[in-house]
Length: 435
Image (cartoon, rainbow, N blue to C red; front, top):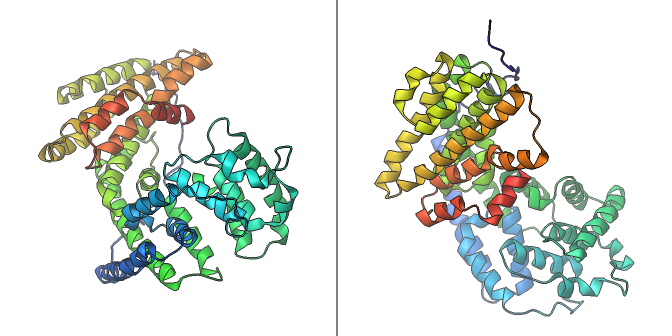
């Protein structure tokens, strides 16, 4: 009697060979690189000019972040924000600090980890009943700034909860009567706030918006475009490399039940680490996501209980000698998993970071055990309670594996960082619950 398999038919990849066949143009690459280096110094001078007012510098920092080029000036921006935050600015001056400016400052300070009170900073726009004043309903730019700031709220901040409801309703009613480029900004923000955006996509969108601004800085536009194109070329080269790795594994031809999603896996990694210095982290993470996807499909969409039990124990033992004990179709998966990590272990050992792979491997073993438990629920027809699912789901969400896998590719991470992760800090647990 043939084994019962819970097979699914996933659609093929949308991308064909377009990324694996990518060839970069060295002359174009050099052109963009030279352009970025020249303009970077000009922009740094704008940012660090001592005579510039706080409001102008904060607006510039926001523009640099929205254009996706702030990573060039991380130290300068942190120094400026630290300096401004400790000025204890009095935001009650209505002529200087309008709603747009105050909400922008609030959002930038919060984004960079500075504790700033909502009650004090937004009080002047509240009436005696604690509601936002009707008079600000005509201030589109200010409302949009407050809307974006409201997404930096923490639990129990009623003012920002009210701000979100108030600005969302008001901006929706205003959209039909707005002109460009403000209309585009409002429509995009209502669809997806800046705080939830993917950095490279947000940068591409804002470059187009900023070009239409009346008081735009032409140097910033040229700088942002050259930098965007340069970084995109690097991302394409990396995508070509991981796509080639994926094809050479040959898992798609051997395991027709799995999803072919290497491009999507790289996009996920690029969304987490877009900056050029994190090339290895992107490759490591993209490959780790792809492997997790194959594991997920093996446990969810093909393996029998008996096969999955043998497979889970083999992953636990982490030994090439286990290959012969596995069903034929599982052997290339197991081999691919071990061969993903062996080169990293050798590479990391040369850097004095041999410990890094251990933490990712241990979380991968935990992920396999979690997948096996879920497979048993499915194949044996058991319906877990919500509490049981939530506990296991924090593991099978994959983030508990992907975060240390990501750290593995970042040279500055230390053993203490991995230990901190393994102790399940609140920020990690909250992320796992959300995912």
